[in-house]
Length: 99
Picture (cartoon, rainbow, N blue to C red):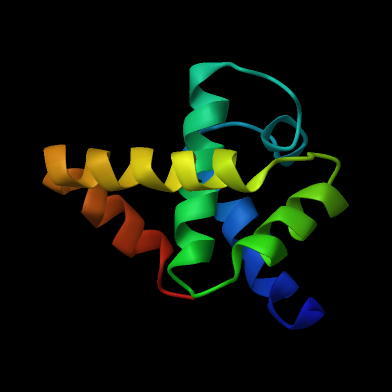
């Protein structure tokens, strides 16, 4: 299970930087739009790595943020819709995805 945790941590750092939030905020219960969007992007990146939803859930929990499978799936769907609506968003994802 821990095999992909370094990748998860790298993504978390890059996503937090992109959204100008701290990693502590990323794993907080905050519903602030930037933090929610950052979390959704983190789920999306991990899922497309590919990481199993259970591992994403475990890694989030290890960082103090307990999240259900349905919330992770919802976040992935939100990012997928953003990509379809805005091609620039895909460029941002590609810039992070060069791990």
